[in-house]
Length: 323
Image (cartoon, rainbow, N blue to C red; front, side):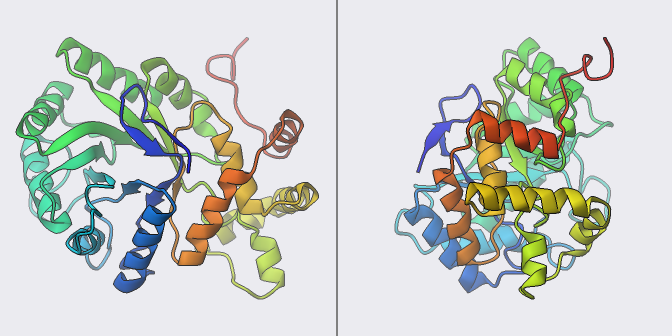
């Protein structure tokens, strides 16, 4: 396994992050525990979850599953860099969502109980809160750091100017601020290249791409459909209807390279110096082992150029849309 620092922090994490959104929804608890154990055995030390996961029926279920895994002992918690998130509505009453100080205080305690631990290594804001001032948010996070309940703060689904606003507010308070941003980023969805990626690089914020295979579209979906292995998810099927020729060209190119399509998609992200660790969300042990195999794939400049031809990206703003 390869390791790198998370953003400008000294925290060392694996180049793949184990996402857990499927745990409890598509993956039973026993299988989830096997995946978590296998991830540690493979050297993956970075596990990402969220208080909302388990929705729509059981928000918090995924954190509970991970907490039950930690409770088995054997150094599981000590070997894990644990990341979770706060923002989503966890109830119908006022202040049960968002990033007001009251909700942050209550949400972190609830996550700690479900996760059966005394601290969270990376506490991520799951979305920007347009109603709460940054002084309130950072004051709440500073208190949690001082209490030892969290160690680092990250964001997810922020725009580039949100990253700048957050970091400048933190700088004014002499606070470390954000060390990571978790964004939708893959060969098919490259919007973050306009402003999020440049902002993250400028501020030393580690980029954690979620949905690196775009709901399976980049994982060989056409080949699997031909073989009768599976059908695309509803989200992927909608995109496939308009990008079928592009996906076919991509799968044909992966075959020319002699690699699995999903491995090429992950290797493309890993080749980007702005990317710290893609977040992979396996439903099975097989999916996990397949993702780890992508670490052995190296794409040369010719291959990277060809992928840009198939999936055109964005130059940074404003050059992307001005002279």
